[in-house]
Every structure is written in structure tokens, then in C-alpha cells.
Length: 152
Image 1 (tube, helix red, strand yellow):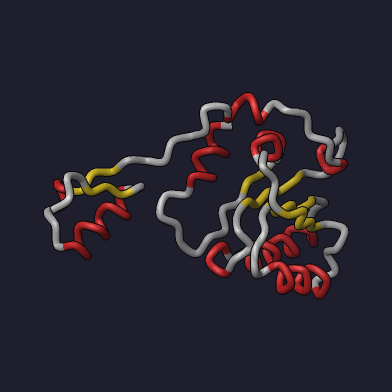
Image 2: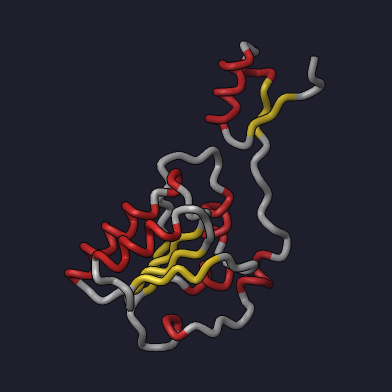
């Protein structure tokens, strides 16, 4: 009875059609839009010592500190990278997994190499300056963060 049915990615639209038993051509895909001020906000100053000249590369993760984002795997992979080369890992976000992630960082001896500064209302200035972005999620519908970082 809906006037329209939409999903935020082809895969989500496929799932909706299957679960709702709708013909696939009745479910449209409407991708999440990028923020209109993305480039302006990305150009704002960033006062963080890891982004100063001549610092090691910064690897960036952004998202809720929750199980589906799988930041433990990212931190463990980063510990392997650190055995071979200097780098820093910055994970922006807040959530229920913070204590677990902080323990893992300590257990791996990465306290000075991995930072969890919490939520920021402007992750774009970090995205623009990071050397590498990692999307470690176990699953996503249509990760808006990926579109944002690719645009930057």
C-alpha cells in the first residue's frame, strides 16, 4: 500500500524486495547524500600533533564503537603494521565497546600509537588529512562514511 519503497543501496533494496515479497522494480535505490558543506568543513584547521609535518602516516577509522564496526580487528591488524613501519591509528567515535578497545590497545602495548579521542562533529578535517582510511565493519548497508572519505 506504500506510495514508494526505497533502500539506501542496491543490496538493501534487494533485501527489501525479497523480505517484502515485492517485484524488484518496485523498490528504488536512493543513496545517502553527502553533506553540502563537506569540503568547507574538511578545510577547517586541524590542531592535532599526529597531523603535523614529518609525522608518521595516520590511519583513520570512523564510526560507532560497537561490535559491527569490528575495530578490534583493525587494532590487531595495526599492531602487525607497527612491527614493520611507523604509523599511528586514530579511531573517531564513541560507543559501548570503548572499554574493550582500550584494554586491547593496552594489552598490545599500543597506548602511544592508537588513540580513541571520541566523537567529533567534524570528522571531515581528519579524513582529508589522513594517509589511509579503513572501513573495518563486518557489514554495512551503504556506508555514508565511505562516500565522504572518497569525496575528500
